[in-house]
Length: 473
Image 1 (cartoon, rainbow, N blue to C red):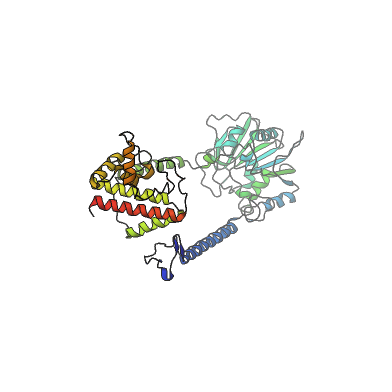
Image 2: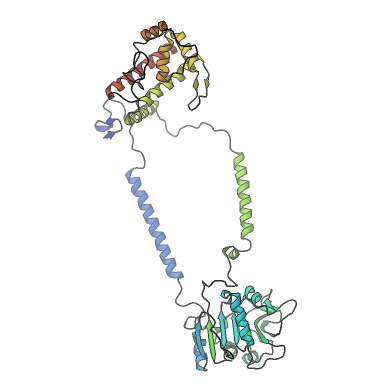
């Protein structure tokens, strides 16, 4: 088995007899396989759920109120009945261009998708004699038309109801179930312009499910156009067409002209008066809910923030021997060939211990870890051991010893320092080529590896001897 510092003997023991410190990092292969299996199973379940959801919720063919749809919400039966009575029924996504004097019936599904100009054009065609039927128009459509009709605040009871109006088609049909939850009423000022309003079914005049506006104040002739507002299109569908008087009411509203255009504006049409942004689609209480949630989060953060105190030491979940930590650092240094960093670490640790022995305070050093004053430390250790300050400075700081403030030593002092430090280990950061006169040596890390390793070991022994001498061990 190969580690960062060499090859381990069989059984996991190191060649030197010590316990191995190289432990596999990260999860073991069985744990990795279990994690991959769990992720695969969860992904497969999620994919299956999405597929089933897409199959269940996808549209079952044609959209609602489609003339060719035989589903319960389609209008195929209505189209066939109208064609049997000679009415030409044609689907479209926009109002066809009308010629002068042409009178036809226009049924608009989802009129909120039309632009303001398109709605104004439809209102103009009513004055020219055509019938325009708007299915469930909303407030935006009624505001654009400005015909004196608004959405009623209260809704009718629903179900079948009597006409409660004098319109001939409603009187012939009798009771009908228009359905839906939208009803119409007259505006508060009652201004209808030049149109006559008739409200039928539901609870007129307060909440009518059918509103018919005829041009002119007087009763309109049978051939005149009209604007029909339906609260719902449920009574036009295949499911509801044969109930009560729904079919009779439908035929009375849609068979006044030989041509009928069933208009369904495209969903992606631009400029629709009923088009709303994402913010407008949010419920009314959504903003208040977000505000309340934000206040709660702020209060929770303040409450939890007041509980924070100074860091406290906690016991380690496992016991790590100091020898393993030291050995691990050593293997990292050996792998990176960082002998100079190892020497700096040895010197830094020795300086901290010697400062504790001598009682020197530590202070913050710019760009480095806190440590004692170099000059005071060297002087104190030299006084305790009787060794030369240059010798102590070379051991503790190497070539990084800060300059002394006592001036330049004399030639006799330099000779004495060289004599007393001739047995010191060489500086690892400036190996064996350091000149005797203090000239610049080779770059850091140069020299043969064997010589650098020997210099590092000699430095470690010298520092350990100095620590023993000062500490009295």
